Length: 193
Image (cartoon, rainbow, N blue to C red; front, side, top):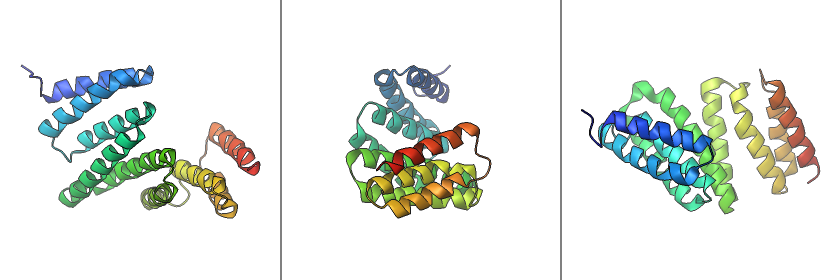
């Protein structure tokens, strides 16, 4: 027997919310993610990776709905929980650092949408450092933070710094053809600024 606050119910809520997100039905996904996060907080614990991922999905949905202020608060909450989780779960530190990098990257995008450039830059650079620490300096996983830094810095008139991040992104190992095409398009776009 599964009650309203059971793990299987939370999993079902998350799955349905993901379907809604993929269909672009963000307004319907948001309350499901809020409820799933609440249930997971009670069943798995407030600092469990699955709870944190539900919070990140909630914040991403809020960004899709244009609720960047609310999303930023959820990201701040998730980062505080990650601090506790890393302190209490040293064996899972690597996986939690990966979650932190994703959280910081998404938070930076929310901050950019709000016009908080300095906070966004700080969080993008922290994301870059975390991903580099985990995957190495040439990993294709560095593509998103490098490209976002290139765009942001160039748009802020810091073209030389932006060009450095773009060049680094283009030199990463194992980029797929589509990724290379997108980088070329970004380079063209930024050259016009």
